[in-house]
Length: 279
Image 1 (tube, helix red, strand yellow):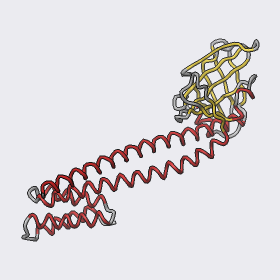
Image 2 (image 1 turned 90 degrees about the horizontal axis):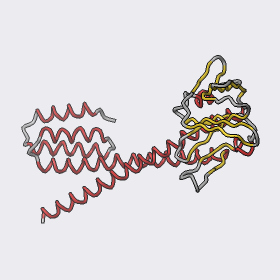
Image 3 (image 1 turned 90 degrees about the vertical axis):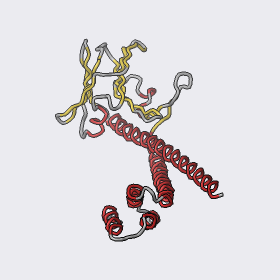
């Protein structure tokens, strides 16, 4: 790839040493810009186009050509961006589909606009009497972790996870609920990934046994996190990142397509106006 700054400097030196007309000098720059464009050197092309704009305000033919070439550069860049986005969407979608084999899909259409993915081992039907950390990932990519406690009332308001002398803790649940089922006290706290005090990332990265401590105004309770629950947290975090990346690339692709459509329409109008003037 040629150095864009060097190209611009050489162009300036060439112009300074010649006695040609402004139209001729601008035309040579336009030819260089066209060659850079055809070589896929879009940054060089832009620099040369800027030289025409800044140095030759009266070279109208070259400036019109430079404007059309700039549109071609914008179109090529957006088409390249769109192609990259589509490739990433395809790659991430394949990764998502592979990951979803470990999840179950849940949605109650009466109350929910979007469903969620949960790990099969963490399904409610398998954990009726367990105190554990359950994770789910919404279709939008948001990940949630829920502290479920069954036993005597402790009114827990915070969750602390620790391993190897380090810990993460959060007491900012976005929802909480206490109820009794089959004579057993049930408490739950819900946290969203990113606002969970780093609990999910801590569990994902931890090695060895992880202790979970629930603290409330009435009492405390602690237990060792099951290996399958620790694995579920890591899988949920990974799935969340993949789903969010897919959504981001889809938005980028849509933006690139909007830009492509705009540039194409602009070029069509420019071509129609040119024909009209020529006629």
